[in-house]
Image: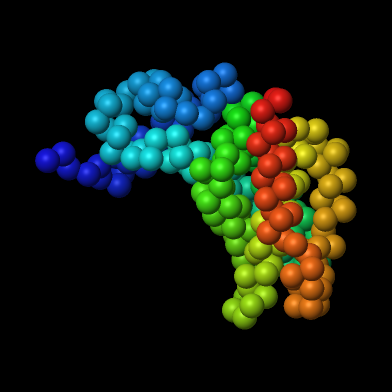
Length: 218
């Protein structure tokens, strides 16, 4: 029986294969071919690649998205959130995430399209939720009631929409979209009274669809 990779080996190998994938994905897309070529470029055997990435392209996609989040949070760590209003904290968080994602150019556009495919939507929404949760925590949110979930649901939808605009239409358009959406994030009482009317699930699905079809054009 082949032993599972040790954590240190796995971390280093994940970094190598992810960097290789980001260099190739703009042309190849996120698929089994990318996994095979990135693994080979990273010096991994087929067996090691299967141990490291048992779900193939989905695992690679999750590594890429979480890398973007780490970059964003490192950028936010340079700021003191206590000097900013909550609205400004959330806006900075969204901006950091969208710029970290956009920095990988076509690879990120192809990644967004991959995550928006129906079979990958659960993963895509989970990664958006992780980003929303990290941003709210950085902003100082400690809510444990129903607002904890509604805040993250709303911000997930905003992140999807703003990142979609950033990847397909550029930074200025994304800034405008964020300015238009920030009130959704800050309307605490509307969350409590109007969540069913807001149709946030539909809004999030629409934003992911925009990522899919918009990214396909990139």
